[in-house]
Length: 254
Image 1: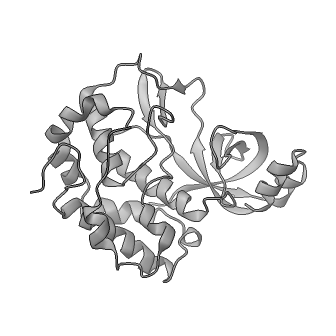
Image 2 (image 1 turned 90 degrees about the vertical axis):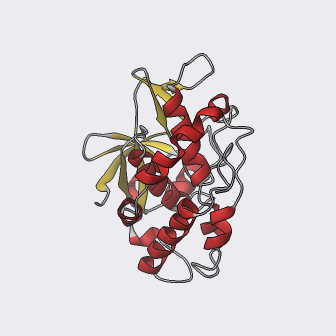
């Protein structure tokens, strides 16, 4: 399965809430997307993490917006008046990531009640991919039509920001601790143990291979080629899934 491909037809507005400054764009399929730009400071690994973790969320039955690849062409940047935005667009010509815009959604807060199983699976996912960015300061959860949706997974899979040898540190990632102390859903930590085995079982070898295959070749930049990097991602994620899971809050090593 590959991501659907669209071409941006209009840059609507920058979204300045985050450090990477995504932007709202309209595309030739008449859709509206939050565009994560390849030229942003965090670079291509953030786009890779978005695709992989979104796919894993789907496998766990967690809601996350549809993703597409967005082709950004030179005329889109040419007519942007804001110099900072124009520089970002010019640095992002080519293939970017689009996240389906959820009109009327609002940010998650403590007043919203979450299904305990859903919250526990969200914590499990964040621990599994070492996501460090789902706190009360920045929940990265939206409420849309009464449901909770997971967004912004770019702060996951830290290991790919420093590839030296694609598979050398898989064992280290497999055992890397993860803290839920600051997690927006930490009130549901007691429920994580009840869903942990089912979550691990849902992330099968076939799921990992298929999810990683969604990442476009041109975003896979490292010490080896795209196919070798895909294999490395699967190796890292398999090792963490099958290890002692000492990274999982509230669960002792097996």
